[in-house]
Length: 425
Image (tube, rainbow, N blue to C red; front, side, top):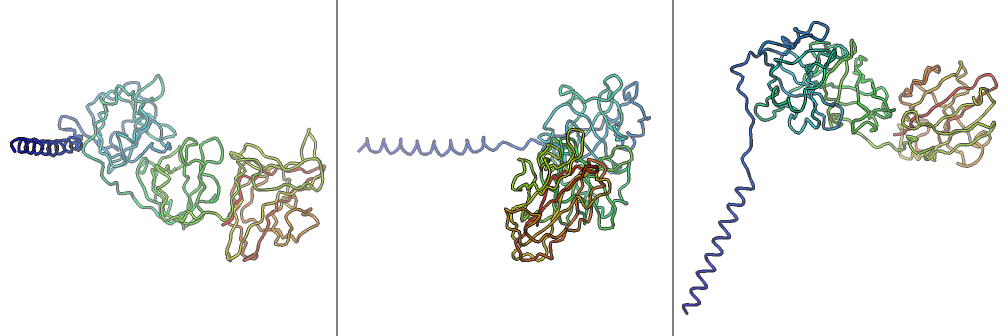
């Protein structure tokens, strides 16, 4: 009997120890929140606008010598790569960029984080008239080094929501005072809807169009995670940071998710020619030249009757797979293209459609083909890609169609036609 009681007491003690140990472990697994704080009482805090008045137009030979401090909230994020080694902060008077060597700044300086910046020892300069704060490297501004960041930047409190200034027209955005500030653009669409955000290997400018017809450029880095996303076709709201390059106002996105109220409806059909001619087939009616591909626009279909310093007669078709418009009464198509050396002979560059083509025969003799009207075509004398705008396919509602790009050249005129993408929705 005593042995049984002894065992019972031991068992109770073990259970109690386990229970208490579990409670202690739970406490250690939930550490208290570390809230950063900074006391600026010994600093001379000035507004961002006041600091920017110290910039004289050239990088200062001497650093800022006064004990000046600015206070602002972070409005930029490098999480998706559109900002790089730069932090944009704003206060009630405007914003400024701070050049910083560390990467992945968003891990420590999230949008809405209050930051105090001690400016003594730093320099002011400008890139494309956009005033920036950083270190001086001979005659240009450079990043504050990783080792020095803690000397100049101090977080205060936890991130809070940043309320953007809303604009429904580009005319209300003011250069200088709106630089590096967080904004909300309403009732806007992309002029080159249906094309890639960054069509080539270089940074891209895409026009955002307001309902009143005014425009602002959306500047996007080729290194951002959403560089090859497709610009939506409909109207929505965009959040971002206003920057500038000289007299050109620009918007920079923090995240692809900052595009709101766009439907992002998946196209009924899309081809970007990133892997050869993709789903399209070429048919050569005349001439030795044929549709091929090139690396322009991050991949495109290319046709030219010019070869070996001569022009040759050609007729060549690039034909889509069958596209089913059953149940669609208002389908639209968008073509992103460039045309050069057309010499005014636009009849040699035609976008065609057929509902009775058999999909394999010579399109010059089989099928009834109708030329489509292109709302916005290239100027015909450059390599610049432009969006066609919305090409209506309403006349072919509820039908199954083929799209044909018909190219012709002669011994005197041989244009170059590049097609970066084709989409139907």
